[in-house]
Length: 448
Image 1 (cartoon, rainbow, N blue to C red):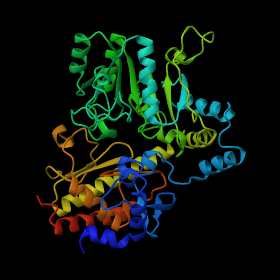
Image 2: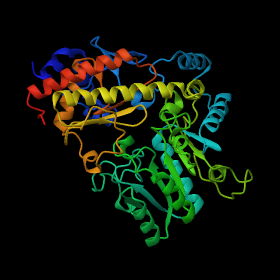
Image 3: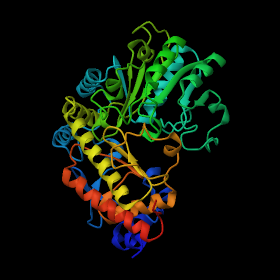
Image 4: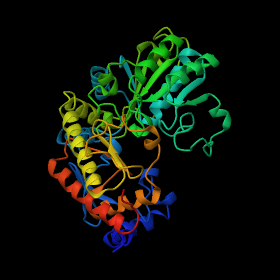
């Protein structure tokens, strides 16, 4: 049976819900990445490394809450903390103990975090970081890098997914203050030499699109040095990498201290939440007059900032992952999965590569065959290869084929939690092999 027809036949409940959703939601979804033709699966419950859909199918989950669930679904420490807070109140509209504890955990774990300001999402965090940088330097210009993703607000969507086009709905004047560069230190130096209005540089800590195109070795250190010398605020976006690469994120691994760091995902233990952390003098722009050296503050309301439920879950999560055990387990499992998937590509003679850093992986079914079955972090692969994604129809059918076999990817990528097991890896490799064979049988893959 063709892949798509098998998917349709296996998921009547999800199909019915999608038809219902399409009447009240644009394209029937609430997040762009959840759109999938002919329809997405609809989850019913989740536990550990698995989720079940409304048709009763179980999946090995490599979406893990868009990367938020390093501990997997429903970790006892997190759910107990959230349940206890739920009984006490979901929104006080007042300050509370958990927000202090949450900030204390962030400052304990994240090297650059002297003080913290909470937001409701990673997008809000990068927006606040840029506003603080502009307020501190008095300069509106921002450098970002090609295909680096920092959320969906107006100042950061340029060249993230629109390939040089002006994104719809955003005034051209808004983008005039944003300079998009390749991740090249000479290009950064040239930009500073040509312009005197650059107040901030923002970079994804793992490289473009959560590591799809990794940064060159030494790039972050070089960028930090340029920013220091030029008086610009160096912002590391660790929304994805924070607490996942290590308890202190990429900055701990690299031994680097940005001026500001943006956080979300794991920060709140699977609940909504984000934060800006960093140098005290920069965060002091949020203080009220009389509370510090500033005479005029940067405004920052936000109904759900440090919401008690998110704060309680975040405190429990950060305390659980503080010693690095969960990060190491997830990363070891991811390395095993990546090398196993590459071994299957070699075995079947299919061009492509699976690569990634820490506990993440990316699938590229294009280009040439990997020379041998091994684990690639992506840095050693040609940039031209990494910037050539899997053809869209091939990627779509790969997702459907894997879903038919009980594996859910996050597009053509995924992340692992510490709740995944060696058995999950073995089952995924079996599903991977069978899916590739079916794709090839239907004419969507070529042999080398």
